[in-house]
Amino acid sequence: MKTAIKLEEFVMFGLSIWLFKSLGMEWWWYVLFILVPDIGMLGYLVNTKVGAFTYNLFHHKGIALLILMIGWTVQSQYLQFAGIILFGHASLDRIFGYGLKYPSSFQDTHLGKIGKAR
Image 1 (cartoon, rainbow, N blue to C red):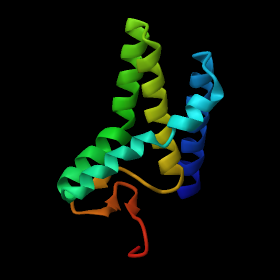
Image 2 (cartoon, rainbow, N blue to C red):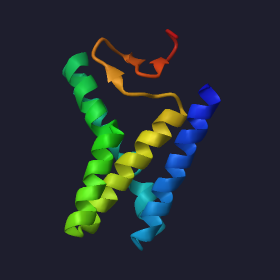
Image 3 (cartoon, rainbow, N blue to C red):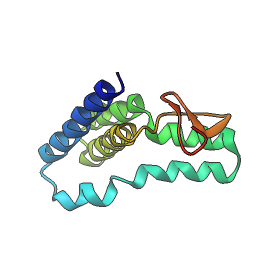
């Protein structure tokens, strides 16, 4: 099952690249911004509850798709770009086993434990 989930996420990551290509922007914008959603980890400097909230805010595919759809609706290339980056980054993270976080610990995710404690 783990392989099937990774394959599904890989396809979704590919979808984000395809959607980005449809924006007609230079490819380096995607490369430059693909890791920006990790800014959500800064919440862990406050505590694990805030960290989990901010991390999940920047890594939730539903939020990413909502931003993308709003971008399509209002014809904003910037919102479309933001939604595509958030979606692609979340898929990329899940390929590597990083899921949405629980407030108990950074290592506790909806995909199971991560890190050395695993």
